[in-house]
Image (cartoon, rainbow, N blue to C red; front, side, top):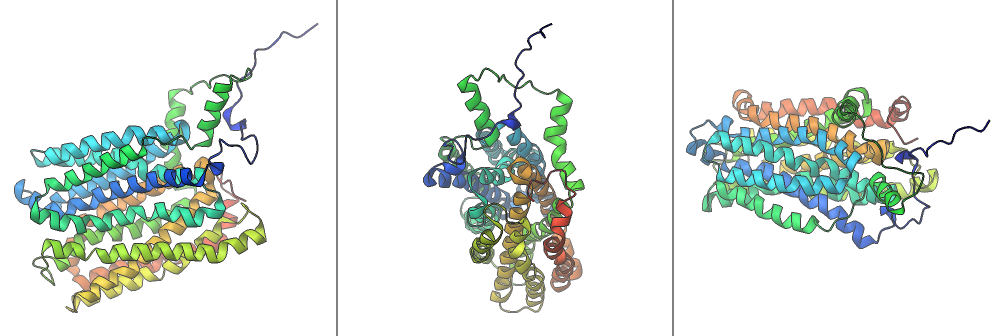
Amino acid sequence: MALPSRAPQARDLVDLDWTGPDDADCPYNWPLWKRLYMTSIPALLCVNVSFASSVYTSGTNDISQQFNVSRTESLLGLSLFLWALGLGAIIAAPVSENYGRRIVYLTTVPIFGLFTLGSGLAPNFVTLIVCRTFAGFFGSAVVSVGGGTNADLWRPTLAGVVYPFYFVSPFLGPAFGPVVGGYLIEAKGWRWLQWVILFMIVFNYLYALPQPETYKKIILEKRTRNEKTPTWSSKVAPPSRAILQRILLKPFKMLFVESIVLFMTIYMAFNFAVFYSFFAAFPYIFGPGGHYNFTPGQQGLTFLSIALGCVVGFVGVVYIDRRTYPALETKYGVGKVPPEHRLYGAMVGSALNPASLFWFGWSANAGAHWASPVVAAVPFAVGNIMVYSSGALYIMNSYGSLHGASALSANSLLRYAFGGAFPLFTVQLFSSLGTGWASSLLGFISVVLVPVPWVLYKYGKRIRAHSQYITAA
């Protein structure tokens, strides 16, 4: 007896693949100009969002006076912005892994702009911090999804050169925030800080509008649908509980069950927190009533040392990659280099952070010439960029484009949680312990964390063998 005919089964999208290594739809094969354009979109937007976080601090004195709140309360506009950045990243990255990168960028950036507009028009302090919180939440997408976009576009061979362009942006933006804000607050007032952010958003959004989709799953799904393949039908949406688990819980799960994500994130989060504590510590040390009594404009210029360190750190990461990775690909094969070799930059940079913190604290405490503590911030910025860039590359190479965005969003959650918390007690810490010992306390913690990249370099392969998400051998 003949078996009854069965309707064609929907082919799961994970079984779809490129037609070959030269598939024109694969972002790896796009023209160089197109890939550079796509790489620049998250980099510029990330500079925009991170600039928005720090430029606010230039106006905290005016905000506290206008709304009759304390300096610590005025810093909530920074802390809540950063906490919302971390929280939004948990949602944005997994959403991009289900629905694509393009829709995430083009829907969240305008809302980020609307809440920035609300911050500039805020009639009271509550409205200001609520708008700043939602601005951070909707600005978070570009911070967490950009790493996935770069993974879509570039083969591992070029990752060490291209990725740092994006990875340096969350630090260059904040470094230039007080530089611009210091003089703007003297000339125009704190509301103009928000208008500058808004002008940047409009430009960057218009620049990003022509972007195509880069995520493999979405490209293949669209192509298969357009080809009207008879054995394929639209994928049935999973139930709401499955969506919740897949989109919201995956980054949390990766943070707590994946040792690589957990320990690298703790290290990167602490460095990030110290970085943002400078936005409270520098005004305390260099500003009126501090060790050096700088004006707001002069005080903002001290952050150029951090910007310089970011650039030097970026160059260092690229140099190390170009000196090591081609030879490693010859040894292991293209695309088969163990991810642990991405940690060389972090291993070098790890020694710079504590040395910088000890130098910075005790030179300022001793009342040395202002150039000494300013220059002391440079090696911290160098080490911070090297640890962050190498660590993020290590995570992306370990988990691939399929899970990498979620892993980095978990990283963003903890980084911004720490970054938002530290400025709230930085001034109290420095005033209680003194500049030297407060900075030294941070330096001692940094010393404890130095072994993290070294341990992962030695035991990373063994750790990855027990992972449920790892795609690299």
